[in-house]
Amino acid sequence: MTAFATAPSTSPHRSDKPGIAKLTFWPLVAATFFMVSGGTYGTEEIVQGAGYTRALLILLVTPIVWSLPVALMIGELASALPDEGGYYAWVRRGMGNLWGFQEAWLSLVASIFDMAIYPTLFVAYLARLAPAVRVGHRAFFVELAVVAVCVALNLAGIHLVGLTSVWLFALLSAPFALMVVLAPFQVGALAHARTAAPVASVGLLGGILICMWNYMGWDNASTIARGVEHPQHTYPGAMLVAVLVIALSYMLPVFAAALTGLPPATFDTGAWADLAGLMAGKWLRFAVVLGGMMCGFGMFNALVMSYSRLPLAMAQDGMLPRAFAKLHPKTGAPWVAIVACAIGWALCLQLGFEQLVTIDITLYGSSLVLEFVALVSLRIREPGLPRPVRLPGGMPGAVIAGLLPTALLAFAALNSERERVLGIDGLAFGALVILSGFAAYWATGKFRRASHRLQT
Image 1 (spheres, rainbow, N blue to C red):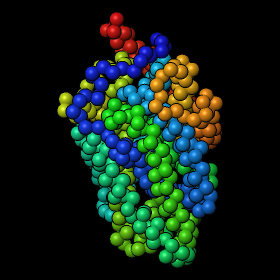
Image 2: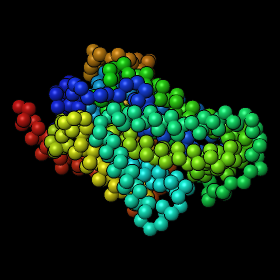
Image 3: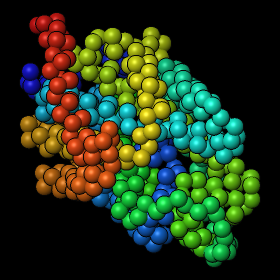
Image 4: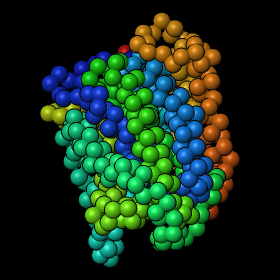
């Protein structure tokens, strides 16, 4: 039941068929940008809770302690094992079927708390341009439309999703780049400006947790390895460039806002649009609001591409029904997995999980810890495995790299009792979800047994 997996599969039913366009370096960077960040949006509460100086410090330290070790780990494992399903395949090979299943389970369950946020974000910014979208059930139907369009793009193939990510990145980043350019000419000019007062402050602790959430999801890029051109060479550089791009996309606008003197206490969701309007007028405010819609759309679009590869890889390995392994004959897209995941996320659009940041961190963090354990396990079990790049520092470096984000995860978990789900504190709810993965593994045993009989 928990035997270690053998070498990564290179069977022809994998989604690396000749003639299907793949992601190159910059589309992978752009797709990773949306899987992790989506831009400056979401940093408002960090500024509000911590103030400008501490917010900049948090935004600088977090990627060093939290993102860089993960990016280096992904660079090593994705270049050594560029297999379908990414982190699921690494954990399964390094630790066995049971833990590989738990890795995929944690990620897919965490996606329920994560994916409903992005269509909601799209509608939140659309409502600033067209408030009537909030009337009746219009918002829900707009959210469904976002899901449908992203499904269509993903069915059209990974290459189109990558190109879409590149254009969305350029368009939503342009207004913030202009704000950064204008800020030195408006030093202190907005010190007495008035914006809509925030309802409540999240505080310093809340700001740190939100910052962790804003830097979360690096491993999502690994699941599409079979769709990346020369993954052994593309992944390491793309991960490091993405860390730098995302950190700058957070820090530079916050620094620009600090220069203007706008009181940090006025920051809440949507404050970037207000700041843009104060700096350059309604046209720039409009551009920032439009960028917020692109942010929600781009993140959902890229994450559909990522998460849908998990059921595909699990079905190919006999963990799920074979139907999930069906590929589109022309684009190579796992169409059954994409549609099935999209239906699940659409059913959760109205559940209102946007505030459960620590729950999301706890579930994601548990899967991340398994990935670092797999990194160490593979170094011990397979020292001769070709690794085009290696996380520096040898075995001690691998252990230390895993300890840094694990310490932050423990900090988030200890504070998850502040969140409540169905009347249960966040830590207990996260534990129940984790334990349910073992029950799900037992329930899917017949698929693994059937797969084993076919292989023998």
